[in-house]
Length: 313
Image 1 (cartoon, rainbow, N blue to C red):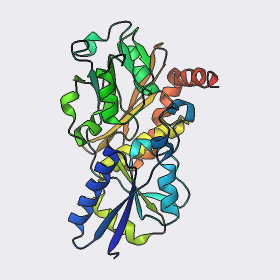
Image 2: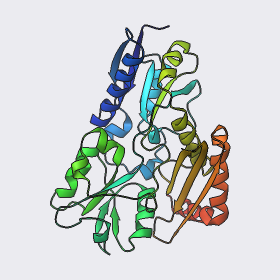
Image 3: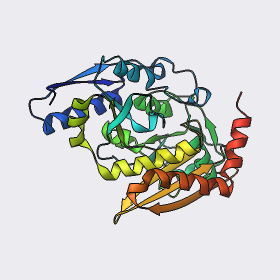
Image 4: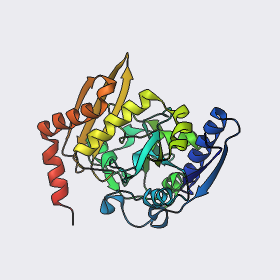
């Protein structure tokens, strides 16, 4: 077995928390293993002006880390799984998916202005760069004004309180919990209102396919239920041919030995949404994700996505 492993990660506060969390899990599972962390700056960290929709979001926060992995500068890449493209770089694989954090989204409202979704009345300004969040929120709260917002988790929270900032924003509850920032939460959005991004709340531990040593130590961190859920969610997104640039959400959960998978495609203009559920054997997670995508496409999701793509520059 290997005696050391280098973790590649982004340098944001949340990314470093995630890398150190994985470091502690590895050290607990393998006493004597030397684990180090290597910070890598990605395009997504450097470019705070370009919208994720404009880039397609594919590899925006992962490409440089994956290149370091391929070049053997690091042995393991720790990603927020929702940032990782559904098709991995040849030669790389998901070595493990650890136990998942809360998958829900949270509303952060301006104090005294937005105390919950009940206050998201027409004209209320909500900062989000996510088509998924925008489409679902407009379906629940018609007439709100969505505007682009970028930055790390603390930055986006701060913008809600700034003069001229939005009245509210939406963030993944997992990141807020990991950074001990849940005091900023105005309301946790129910899954009936807001399905998460594929892989939200999960970590993706990426390694080289031919690195048997790294794969061996990572096996101790694997959560089979989380793996089945995110496999289905990512297969769903892959069939829709999208990443974070399309207004689609999905959530898989293993319940009594069955994998239950919910999915949604929402019109970013608030024109409605398509939502469905399928269930099956967790061993068939990938096929289940494709099946859910086909159901939604038959319900009209294809027309929503086609309109969105026709509007792209």
